[in-house]
Length: 384
Picture 1 (cartoon, rainbow, N blue to C red):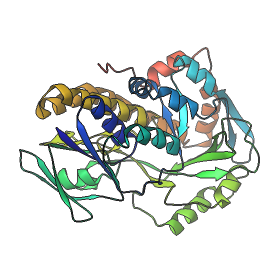
Picture 2 (tube, helix red, strand yellow; picture 1 turned 30 degrees about the vertical axis):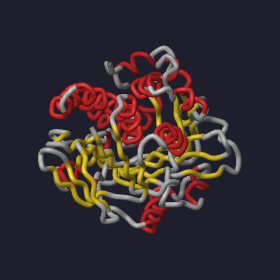
Picture 3 (cartoon, helix red, strand yellow; picture 1 turned 45 degrees about the vertical axis):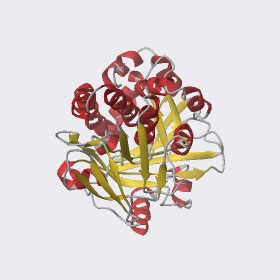
C-alpha cells in the first residue's frame, strides 16, 4: 500500500512514522519550506505521550521540553490575580505532560522519518482524482502520482478537505475569538513558566522556553473569520493589547516573522464523516480541537497511530470506518470541553474575571487537580 500524506506537521509526520512501523510506504508533501516550523509551543498529554513511547521518541521530547513551574496571571495594570503551578498538573498526569516548542517537536518527528520516506517541501496538491481503485494526485509543480490512499493532515484550512469534501466554510464552527502566537527574545527572565495578563474579552501572555526566549499566546473576542495581511494583524494586536505593560509591551513591539508566527480565527472543524472513498482526514483537517482544549496535538498523534494500525490489518474501507468509530467519541467530547473553556479563558465581564481569579487556583491546586483533570482532560485511549 502506498499512501500520500498531505501536511508535514505533527499529525502528518506522526502518521508517516506509524505507517513505517507497519511496513507501509508513505509519501509526505508539505507546502512550507523545510525550515518553517512555527514560533509557538504545543503540549504533549497522555495520548500523545503514549504514541511517542511506542515510536521510541519520548526521551527526545523530554530532552527538549520547556521548564514547568509557576504560572502567574495579572490584570492589565500588572496587579496579580492568581497563580498556580504546572508541576501540580504534571503530577496529576503521573508525569505524562510536557510543553515543547513546535520547531523542536517538528525536528524530532522529521528526524524519525527523513531518509525512510520521501518528504516534498514547498509542494501542494492542486487536484485529486479518486477513481475507486486509487487516487491520482496532481501537485503544484505540475507532476502527478498514483496512490492507494490520500490522507489530509494539512490543518485547519485543509486543501484536501476543500478538494474532496467541500468549501472550508461548510465545516467551520467559529468560537468567537482570534488568536496569535510567535516567539520573542527576553530582555530579562520571566521567573515563571508563564506570565499572563487578562482583561474583559482578552487574554495574553508569555511562556518561558528556557533559552532566553518566550513563546507568546494572545487571544481576544472577535467574531470575524476573514484572513488578514501582516500589517492588519499588527494593527489589531496594537489596538487590543497596545496599552498593556510588561512583559506584553515588549512582545508587541518585537519583530514578528509572520511566515513563522500564527494568526487566525479560533474555530473548530466539524465534518460529518472523515473519509470519502480513498481520501481521509486526520487531525485539525478533520476536527480542530483548538488550543483551548490543550489536547490537539496529542489527539492528532493518537488518531495517526490508530489509523495506521487499522490500515495495517484491514481493507481501507473497514480501516477508515474503524478509525473514525474509535476516535470520534473522544473528539466530540473534547470539542465540547473546548467550547466551554473559551468562556473561562476569555472573561466576559469584570465580575467573571474576579470569579475566575478565586476559583481557578482552587481547581488547579493539588487538592482538587485530579477532579479537575478528570473533567477537562482527554481520557486515555485504547491504542492497541
